Image (cartoon, rainbow, N blue to C red; front, side):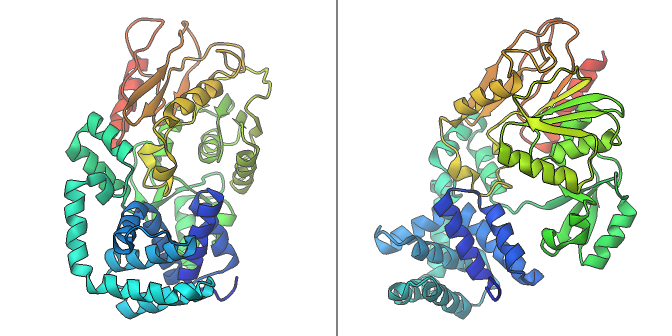
Length: 444
């Protein structure tokens, strides 16, 4: 792996993701571990991979229009995507470098017979760059789903719900790079010591103010080497985590000495945050139904020095009663699409129903009761692009508090036995208002 260039790593990561039908991010991370790059080359590689995945549909439309729909070998198509992304979305790449590197990639992938074709295609797109740029702008106006590189069915369902203007803004947001945010692990360090460690490691970071986090706990990493190469990362001094994931733990409000159940716990960001809030004192049961995800959960808990957690399968029998229960049931993840690069290509119109069934099984593995043998105060709402699919359960008086994440919320309503379902929030500000209303209702 040594000696590979960023475009070659990007190409091989994209091809492996296509061949295995797996998310490209962990594949790229493994490539970085085995073939270290400079920070500049790492940034270029990430940009190429994320751009080619996000804009795949539009790039393929440009290729098919130019080749009259002729089928291309997977490696050739991926090389063309990489070249077109550099031409139309990156302004600092010299034209000769785009052509030369594309031809080199073809030869490295043993596509010698297609090297001349790739060379000709790159030169043609460079000659026609201005006109094609105007065509893309027109396309984004007349055919927004194609112009913003989203599936038609998803655009249509969002448009019915949100309207055209808001849907276009959502798609534009999805196509923007997501910032890298980190939460300080106060079990091991504090913001001041971590900032000094980052300075020594070449990390540029700035603090983030967030209502559900203590002052100084969140940072945005503006510039950094590969995270896996940082000693502060390996030592568990911080966890890479979107600020929105802290909302449910804040609502849960775990305390030292309590018994807490974290259902669907992997990969472990919330589990580790709960343990930190508990100061590693008490009983934290972290469960998940996937052995591979449990492995990741164990790795993260070990790295973050979580000692109060017991990990196991979701269907494991538990005899304890819990003071708090966190249920992060499977959801569509459309609210974090810009962080999940290939999510838009893995979703399907019927996927929400399957997720709803999985969510119900996860929330009520014992036929409507949680592991302690008492009904939970949870009503799961599974967001579906075109509407909502809710699973309703009776809520007896005095049942334990259950905090849920993102599109799964127990919303306050009238009457002692039931809670009305509300449309889930889709922006950070909406989520904060939503949770504020829940907390205000519970305090009454």
